[in-house]
Image 1 (cartoon, rainbow, N blue to C red):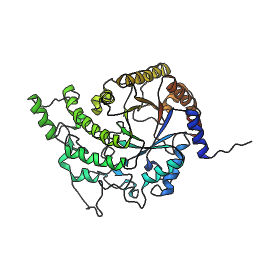
Image 2 (cartoon, rainbow, N blue to C red):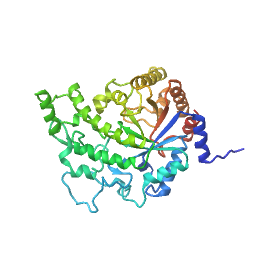
Image 3 (cartoon, rainbow, N blue to C red):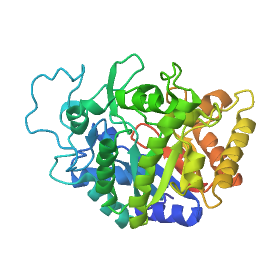
Amino acid sequence: MKMHFSLAALVAASCAASGAFEKIAYIDSFDYSAAYETETVEGSRKIVDNVLKTGANIILWRNQSGSIPCYPSPEEVLPLKEPPLDIRRIPLNEPIRGWVRYDDCWTDPIRDAADWAAERKVVFGIHVTTEENHWESWTLGPWNLEHPQFWCCTRGGTPWPGRVSLFHPEVRDHKLRLMEELLAYRPKMICLDMLRSGGWTPAKEYTIAVTAEWRRRYACEPPVDAADPRWIELVEEYTRAYYRGIRERARKTGTEMVMTVEHWGAAKDYNLVNRAVDWRRLLREDIVDSIAIACVKPDWNDPWGSTERLYRLAVSEAKAARATAKVYLPIMGYNFTGRPGYPEYAKRCKMTQAEVVTRLMKMSRAVGADGITMEVVDLSNYSPEVCAAIRDN
């Protein structure tokens, strides 16, 4: 006899079964744009309903796709008629898929998704990427395009328009205005994603202003190696000032702040050297509440033992930095540029993906994690069998 359950019942059962264990799903509405009319209310609802099949009890909606905001943003407004040529633009700098424009559609996708999530009785939050565009391969945002004086720069002096430098107070103010737009939706959680950097690292911070500050402090030329501890310390100062500004605004709305941490199991200072993020300090200074490990890099000679050790280390180091910190471990539905997801475990361990996910879920609970993150839920990953494993564990 077949049993039929409503989606709402599945979600409720998942939440009840999981108790305090949180199952967070990242969502990029653009991933669904080939299948749904994602610029409509119905499209946003379909996306949420598809994601909830995983058993997620928290969903985090992406704030932008490429450089196009996923909502009507007063701060990032494209001109009504763009010039045919701008020498500052790069090849392929064109509208995403030509027609997907969440910033000027007749509805507000984030508001629609938040309202529908509330009806489905799941927590709604916003997934904020570090990148301003995908490796300069899509569009440059309007504010970025109109402020080349703030563009990042390589040590050789080549402008790098992939991001405007946070060293400048004007840039931090611009980004904090964007954050205020997102906080106006009253999300329960803001996730600051360090994984999606758009190719940015401190090696792109050799701007005139930053190098002048270096010379003022150290009376010498900036280092050749961007991993020089003093260079990292300088860049980390103003990135941390930006995160502190977010925290001050988020505190007014009671929004929990989560930060993703890259590559667990790589060099211990990977996040500091590559993202100028001292996440332990951010926890200690009450700038972020929680840490989400983006991925781990296990020893494939001992995949399960090494994964468990890395999981335990992540939890212990986060709790040591701040006893109340929450820690989320990864259930990643694909392998991404050397970052192994559960498909890689399945391949190497000769297990089904559902068996791998079941083991990772149980391991996450056993090591004392507060929940898991699913990166990113779209139509091409998280099979029904995997969704069941997440819901049931």
